[in-house]
Length: 193
Image (cartoon, rainbow, N blue to C red):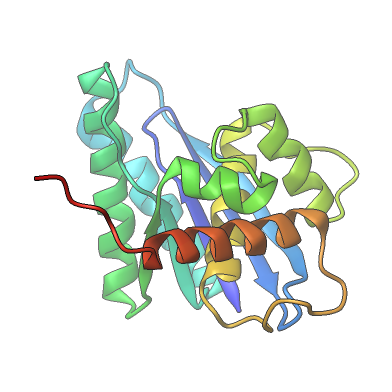
Protein backbone atom coordinates (compact mmCIF):
# COMPACT_ATOMS: atom_id res chain seq x y z
CA UNK A 1 0.00 0.00 0.00
CA UNK A 2 1.32 3.43 -0.91
CA UNK A 3 0.14 6.25 1.35
CA UNK A 4 0.70 9.97 0.98
CA UNK A 5 0.57 11.66 4.37
CA UNK A 6 -0.20 15.37 4.52
CA UNK A 7 0.40 17.59 7.54
CA UNK A 8 -1.59 20.61 6.31
CA UNK A 9 -0.45 24.17 6.85
CA UNK A 10 -0.14 27.42 4.92
CA UNK A 11 3.40 28.27 5.96
CA UNK A 12 4.66 24.67 5.90
CA UNK A 13 2.68 21.75 4.51
CA UNK A 14 4.43 18.45 5.21
CA UNK A 15 4.24 15.72 2.56
CA UNK A 16 5.43 12.16 3.03
CA UNK A 17 4.99 9.02 0.94
CA UNK A 18 5.53 5.54 2.33
CA UNK A 19 5.07 2.05 0.96
CA UNK A 20 3.86 -0.41 3.58
CA UNK A 21 4.18 -4.15 3.04
CA UNK A 22 1.77 -6.80 4.30
CA UNK A 23 4.05 -7.41 7.29
CA UNK A 24 3.65 -3.70 8.20
CA UNK A 25 7.20 -2.80 7.21
CA UNK A 26 7.22 0.81 6.04
CA UNK A 27 9.64 2.20 3.47
CA UNK A 28 10.25 5.86 2.66
CA UNK A 29 9.37 6.80 -0.91
CA UNK A 30 9.41 10.60 -0.73
CA UNK A 31 9.30 13.41 1.81
CA UNK A 32 9.23 17.18 1.62
CA UNK A 33 7.62 20.41 2.69
CA UNK A 34 5.87 22.98 0.54
CA UNK A 35 5.56 26.44 1.96
CA UNK A 36 4.49 29.98 1.48
CA UNK A 37 5.07 33.21 3.35
CA UNK A 38 2.55 35.27 5.28
CA UNK A 39 3.44 38.22 3.02
CA UNK A 40 1.78 36.46 0.06
CA UNK A 41 -1.93 36.88 -0.58
CA UNK A 42 -4.09 33.99 0.65
CA UNK A 43 -5.06 32.92 -2.88
CA UNK A 44 -1.37 32.75 -3.89
CA UNK A 45 -0.52 30.73 -0.78
CA UNK A 46 -3.31 28.25 -1.45
CA UNK A 47 -2.24 27.97 -5.08
CA UNK A 48 1.31 27.04 -4.04
CA UNK A 49 -0.06 24.17 -1.94
CA UNK A 50 -2.57 23.08 -4.62
CA UNK A 51 0.11 22.88 -7.31
CA UNK A 52 2.45 20.94 -5.02
CA UNK A 53 -0.28 18.46 -4.06
CA UNK A 54 -1.14 17.92 -7.73
CA UNK A 55 2.53 17.30 -8.53
CA UNK A 56 2.94 14.83 -5.65
CA UNK A 57 -0.25 12.95 -6.54
CA UNK A 58 0.87 12.67 -10.17
CA UNK A 59 4.46 11.70 -9.34
CA UNK A 60 3.77 9.15 -6.59
CA UNK A 61 0.27 7.81 -7.46
CA UNK A 62 -0.69 6.91 -3.87
CA UNK A 63 -3.42 4.40 -3.08
CA UNK A 64 -4.76 6.64 -0.32
CA UNK A 65 -4.14 10.01 1.33
CA UNK A 66 -3.87 10.42 5.09
CA UNK A 67 -4.52 13.97 6.25
CA UNK A 68 -4.31 15.38 9.75
CA UNK A 69 -7.80 16.12 11.03
CA UNK A 70 -8.31 19.80 11.84
CA UNK A 71 -8.77 20.37 15.54
CA UNK A 72 -9.64 23.43 17.56
CA UNK A 73 -6.77 25.63 18.66
CA UNK A 74 -6.67 28.99 20.32
CA UNK A 75 -5.38 30.68 17.15
CA UNK A 76 -8.37 30.90 14.81
CA UNK A 77 -6.32 32.07 11.82
CA UNK A 78 -4.10 28.97 12.12
CA UNK A 79 -7.15 26.70 12.23
CA UNK A 80 -8.61 28.43 9.18
CA UNK A 81 -5.39 28.04 7.20
CA UNK A 82 -5.11 24.35 8.10
CA UNK A 83 -8.76 23.80 7.17
CA UNK A 84 -8.33 25.58 3.83
CA UNK A 85 -5.25 23.53 2.95
CA UNK A 86 -7.01 20.33 4.04
CA UNK A 87 -9.88 21.16 1.68
CA UNK A 88 -7.51 21.67 -1.23
CA UNK A 89 -5.81 18.33 -0.52
CA UNK A 90 -9.11 16.45 -0.23
CA UNK A 91 -10.44 17.92 -3.49
CA UNK A 92 -7.21 17.09 -5.36
CA UNK A 93 -7.52 13.47 -4.21
CA UNK A 94 -11.23 13.33 -5.04
CA UNK A 95 -10.55 14.50 -8.60
CA UNK A 96 -8.31 11.45 -9.02
CA UNK A 97 -10.62 9.01 -7.22
CA UNK A 98 -8.10 8.55 -4.40
CA UNK A 99 -9.64 7.86 -0.98
CA UNK A 100 -8.81 10.20 1.89
CA UNK A 101 -8.57 9.29 5.57
CA UNK A 102 -8.42 11.81 8.40
CA UNK A 103 -6.47 11.10 11.58
CA UNK A 104 -6.19 13.18 14.74
CA UNK A 105 -2.77 14.18 16.09
CA UNK A 106 -3.26 11.94 19.15
CA UNK A 107 -4.10 8.93 16.92
CA UNK A 108 -0.91 9.50 14.99
CA UNK A 109 1.22 9.90 18.12
CA UNK A 110 -0.25 6.72 19.62
CA UNK A 111 0.28 4.76 16.40
CA UNK A 112 3.96 5.54 16.01
CA UNK A 113 5.10 6.00 19.62
CA UNK A 114 2.58 4.08 21.73
CA UNK A 115 1.50 7.29 23.51
CA UNK A 116 -1.12 9.77 22.33
CA UNK A 117 0.69 12.49 24.29
CA UNK A 118 4.12 12.10 22.69
CA UNK A 119 5.96 15.25 21.66
CA UNK A 120 7.21 16.08 18.17
CA UNK A 121 10.73 14.87 18.98
CA UNK A 122 9.43 11.44 20.00
CA UNK A 123 7.33 11.18 16.83
CA UNK A 124 10.31 12.16 14.67
CA UNK A 125 12.54 9.65 16.46
CA UNK A 126 10.08 6.79 15.93
CA UNK A 127 9.48 7.74 12.28
CA UNK A 128 13.26 7.62 11.82
CA UNK A 129 13.39 4.19 13.42
CA UNK A 130 10.33 2.77 11.65
CA UNK A 131 11.57 3.90 8.24
CA UNK A 132 15.18 2.92 9.00
CA UNK A 133 16.49 6.42 8.24
CA UNK A 134 19.91 7.79 9.16
CA UNK A 135 18.46 11.02 10.55
CA UNK A 136 15.02 12.40 11.43
CA UNK A 137 13.17 14.12 8.57
CA UNK A 138 13.22 17.90 8.94
CA UNK A 139 11.38 20.09 9.56
CA UNK A 140 8.90 18.48 11.98
CA UNK A 141 6.10 18.91 9.41
CA UNK A 142 7.86 16.38 7.16
CA UNK A 143 8.16 13.86 10.00
CA UNK A 144 4.51 14.45 10.91
CA UNK A 145 3.43 13.76 7.31
CA UNK A 146 5.34 10.46 7.34
CA UNK A 147 3.80 9.58 10.71
CA UNK A 148 0.34 10.19 9.22
CA UNK A 149 1.10 7.88 6.31
CA UNK A 150 2.42 5.15 8.62
CA UNK A 151 -0.57 5.50 10.93
CA UNK A 152 -3.05 5.08 8.14
CA UNK A 153 -1.32 2.04 6.68
CA UNK A 154 -1.11 0.35 10.08
CA UNK A 155 -4.73 1.18 10.98
CA UNK A 156 -6.23 0.31 7.62
CA UNK A 157 -6.36 -3.42 8.30
CA UNK A 158 -4.49 -4.26 5.11
CA UNK A 159 -1.48 -5.48 7.01
CA UNK A 160 -1.09 -8.91 8.54
CA UNK A 161 -2.78 -9.59 11.88
CA UNK A 162 -1.00 -9.10 15.18
CA UNK A 163 2.03 -11.25 15.76
CA UNK A 164 3.50 -10.83 12.29
CA UNK A 165 7.23 -11.32 12.00
CA UNK A 166 9.34 -8.18 11.91
CA UNK A 167 7.01 -6.15 14.13
CA UNK A 168 8.66 -3.07 15.61
CA UNK A 169 8.23 -2.12 19.26
CA UNK A 170 6.02 0.81 18.23
CA UNK A 171 3.83 -1.46 16.11
CA UNK A 172 3.42 -3.89 19.01
CA UNK A 173 2.54 -1.03 21.40
CA UNK A 174 -0.02 0.22 18.89
CA UNK A 175 -1.62 -3.23 18.60
CA UNK A 176 -1.84 -3.53 22.36
CA UNK A 177 -3.36 -0.03 22.72
CA UNK A 178 -5.84 -0.80 19.94
CA UNK A 179 -6.88 -4.08 21.63
CA UNK A 180 -7.27 -2.32 25.00
CA UNK A 181 -9.41 0.43 23.46
CA UNK A 182 -11.61 -2.19 21.82
CA UNK A 183 -12.04 -4.07 25.12
CA UNK A 184 -12.95 -0.83 26.92
CA UNK A 185 -15.52 0.00 24.23
CA UNK A 186 -17.15 -3.39 24.64
CA UNK A 187 -17.58 -3.04 28.43
CA UNK A 188 -21.15 -2.12 29.38
CA UNK A 189 -21.52 1.41 30.60
CA UNK A 190 -23.03 2.00 33.97
CA UNK A 191 -25.90 4.45 34.11
CA UNK A 192 -26.76 6.49 37.16
CA UNK A 193 -30.27 7.32 38.12
